Length: 161
Image (cartoon, rainbow, N blue to C red; front, side):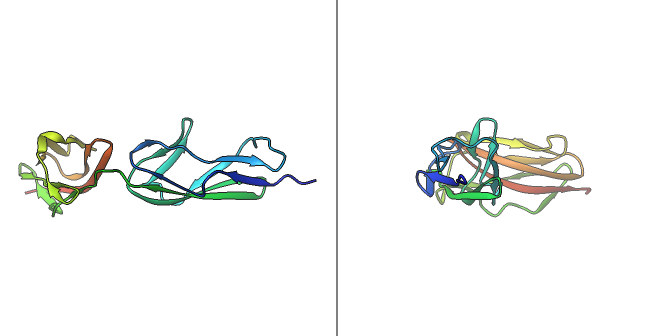
């Protein structure tokens, strides 16, 4: 008798925060747990799988597919944080020495910059302080803003004057 891979639990999982995701169980037709399932996630910006299980990374919907000995199971993960953050008309670039304010909307409304946590992926290229981005050196950096488990990201390029 050949064992078949089976999904036990919902085929759609919806979470309203970033972080750990409760995932459906995967079992074999004899009730045992298969060893060595390889996971594929169709949209890596939404979620990832690591040694701590599935993690929601950003807003969206992604297919999660488990592969084992030529078989597969799949389920859908929907990440819909209660807060939706997005940048409102960010500049495409700025020049070295220029400082520009970045406006973030929370659920479509302006918010106080003090309520947000800001970071720059390359702080030697682009400095960020309470929503004000400053060009420091030529290059590209990603500005990330977070609040209560929700996040938004924008790419900014710093040019020579």
